[in-house]
Every structure is written in C-alpha cells, then in structure tokens.
Length: 603
Image (cartoon, rainbow, N blue to C red; front, side):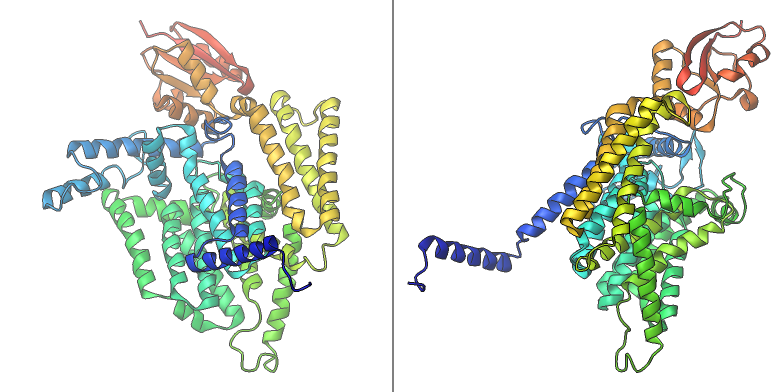
C-alpha cells in the first residue's frame, strides 16, 4: 500500500520535474529570480522616481542650489545649438545614405552643439560633457523641465543598483538582493540620484567599472575588463581625470598589499585601452581645438587648484567627510560601520596569513580578497579628499556602494550566528533618529527655528519610537532575513511624508520655480529680470525664465522696463539704484525673504 502513489501527487511531481527541465533547456529564470527582480525593480523605482516625475507623485521639488539649474541650462542651450546645426544641413545623427555628403552632414549634426558646453551663450568649461549629453537626450525625448534634468542621475543610479544585484548574485549569492536594496535606500544615493548634477554620472559608472575589475580578478576572464575600461571612460567623460586616478590608486593599493604585481600588468588590456581612448580622446581633443583655454581652465583650475586650494570657497575641516559619511549612510550607518570594522579585521587576518608561506603553500591566492578590495575602495576616496582644499559632499559618493555591499555581505555571513543584541538596538535607534529628524524638517522650513513646538516634538518622537520599535521587534522575531525589508519602512515612509505631504513647502523654501511662476503671472509682458540675490536663486530664475539675469553691480541698471528681485533687507538701496526711476512693488516672496519690484522704462 505504501508503494501506491496518489495520482494527484504523482502528477504534481511530474509537472514540477517537467518545469525544471523546461527551465533548464530554455534557460528560463526561476520563480525566486523573478520575484527578486520584481522586488528590486518596484522598490528601486519608487525610491528613485517618487515625487520626481509628474506621473508618479508629481515633480514636487524644483531645481535647487546653484549647480542644478546651471547644469540644466547648459544642457538646454547645447540642445538648442545642436538642433540648429542639424537644421542648417537638413540632417540627422544617422546618415540618410552612405554618400559622402550625407555622412559629412550627419557628422556636422553630431558635432554641432555637443562639443563645447554653453551657458548664456558663452563656453562653460568646468566639467566634461557626459551629463549634458544625457540631459540633452532626455530633454529631446520628454521636453525641457526640471524633472527631465534629473533623469540622467536617476537612470545612472538604477543601472548601478541593478549591476550591484547582478554582480553579487553571480559572485556572492545570498546577499545580492540586500546589497542592491541597501545601496538604493541609503540617504546619499537617494539624494544624489535626484540631483541634476555630475556626481552620480561619475559615481555610477566608476563603481560598475570597479566591480567589473574585481570580477576579472576573481575569474581571469577578460570579458570583465570591458566593464573597467568602458565605464571608466564614461566616468572620465563625467568629471575628468579623477576617475582613472581613483581607480588606478585603489587597484595599485590592492595588488601592492597582496604582492600580486603581475595583476597590474595583466590589467593593461590593449583592446580595453583602445576602447577607453576612443571614447575619451575625441571630445577632449575637439573641445581643446575649439577652446584653446580648456586645458588650463579644466585641468589646472578646476582639478589641481580645486584640490590644492580653497579658491572656490568650499573649505571644510579635515573631519568633514566623516560627518558626511555618517549622514550619507543613514539609516544603515551603524550596520555599515560594523560591517566595515568586521571586513578590516578579516583583511588584516588575511594579510597576516599571507605572510605565513606554510599556510598557503602551493596556492596562488590567499583567502577571500573581496572584503579587502571593498575596504580599500571605500576608504581611499574618503582619505584622499579629506586633504583637499575644497570639499563637497558628492566627492566621496564613490565610497558609498562598497560600504553598502560590505553591509549586505556582513548580514549574509551573520545569518547562522545572528546579530549582536547591541547592534540590533543601535540599528533600530538609527532608523528612529532618521524618522525623528525628517519629521521635524517641515517645521524648520516653515518657522526657521532649531527648536520646533512641543506638539511637533512629541509627534516626531512618538513616530520615531514607533518605527524604531517595529525595526527592533521584527529583527528580533524573524532575524537577519528581515533586516533589509523592515529597514525600508522608515525610508519609504519619510520619502512619502516629505514629498507627498510637504513637497510644496520644500519647493517654496529651496527652489526658484514658484518665484518664477509668480513673476510670470504678475508681469507676463516683462522679459528682463534684474537680481541681487543669492546664487542658487539667481541661477534658478535664469533656468525657469530661460534668460540670463541682469546684475546691477556688474551690468548696471537697464534703461528698459524690467523686474527687480532683491533681498528684503536690501530694499533700503532702492533709492540709490533707481534715482529718478518709477517703480512699484509687485509682491513679497516671504518664504525666502525676497521682494519683487516692477521698474518702468527710463523716460
């Protein structure tokens, strides 16, 4: 009787076996793989695009700071020049035929407006052109707007997260989904993924290239070196020589500590070198030919002088990047630091073992090199840029992914023994702290005070305690497999809270977009705008009005009718500036302390 199988059971087993054979022969992904891809895609897209694109929470926050509107305006003007160049020869980037004339016209179309970055009609040579090219393509596809200006960073981040997932799945299975989700959910990645800037254009391809190099180191397959050279070239087109310098320094440190100098020689792969030069040199040569001052401005002033001096007014204390790192890794800060310390300990132990020839007699490589590589990759940019005379948060963005990968790897290796109790408490407290700070952010924006009302302090404190308790109890009950899932809750909740409920307040306090709209409504027939305000609002108004601003101090007072935008504290200077002119107040932009006047034409 025991040998007799029920037909339903037998059919289910045969069906399962058939499905497995079908998946094997057709190379179909497993149900687990499909589920992981769906989770990765849904969570990452939400983190990157919610509150950014109009169809997904609305484009809540306009361009902020000085760099975002400036870079977006450069891409807009380059696109205009490119379109005009193509129109002049009635050609597109792909030749209509192989006739020499059609090929020349298409080349003219490609080069027109894409070589020299332009701001307000003049060359702007501070940064290479990768961001501008990518923004131009999004502008052409979806129209010129603030959210399309941010899509180059969001799409680059998505590529980075997916490549982290695929790399870890291939070489360190088990923690691959956590590695991708932790990367996508830390504050630094979420913030820079939503910025119209060059920082993510450097960090994403640089990190993909470094993962490719290590894949080659571990497998010996030259295919993986393609990643290093291709994405290294993309990073060089994003920010210049800092990309190959960082990559070469990290690789040199790694092979030097492991005394595998032949690896450095074998890294020099001729097809890869040719690919790198073919991608990088044409633009650098072309922009120098058209702008003879490019090499001096870009390499000497905006690379060497920026590092060695405080010429651009970005001086910060030596410990600045430690603070940036602690904030940028939130809410994974404690876990990441613990993972880094653990990996340093593992790397030191490996280093000691490698110096015992009896232990690895007959072996070509000592132990697992991945933690050691990630530690060097994470620490070198932080240490290097700490000596820089100019410091900005985005400089150490390439150090974040190796730390998030180390965190996921640490969690995966700790599944059997579990996490220390103090680490669970500290991680839950960090999640609660993130919620507490961000819950109070709207109050600071509204009332510009460091100490909010007692009511809001109690609300923020209770919310932080609730999220911290959820994180702690979930990890304690279900263990490490749920660490990443439950930590995503406060990240997603605060993102919805800030952009879904307080997006307009963020826009009013930090962007020039509402101010530009109000000026357009109040004086739609006046084109000229003169300003005496801080740089970020000045560049913001220039982007949203698509016109360069006039400055009384340098350009003089225009005789034509114009709009004057000044700080409210500077209103006393109106009589000095506009003696004998007729003007009237239009409105007070109270959230940023700005007054707007209509100045009539000189009689």
